[in-house]
Image 1 (spheres, rainbow, N blue to C red):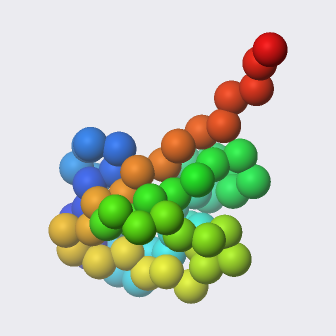
Image 2: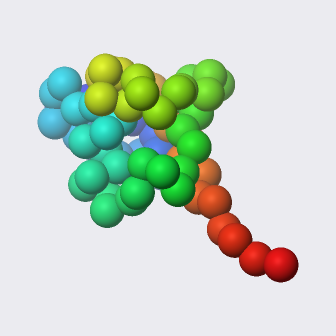
Length: 67
């Protein structure tokens, strides 16, 4: 299990959860968000490769259109 902080809220995930799995769990479209992991912006192609670990800090930002 991994205990992380997601957008300021502490959550617990299964071991070896990737960023892509996290997005899928919360039904977020990877093309409409940006992810910062421990202060570093993660490129979209790496979402499926980055495994979350204990004490990771994840910030997910949604893009909102408007005019």
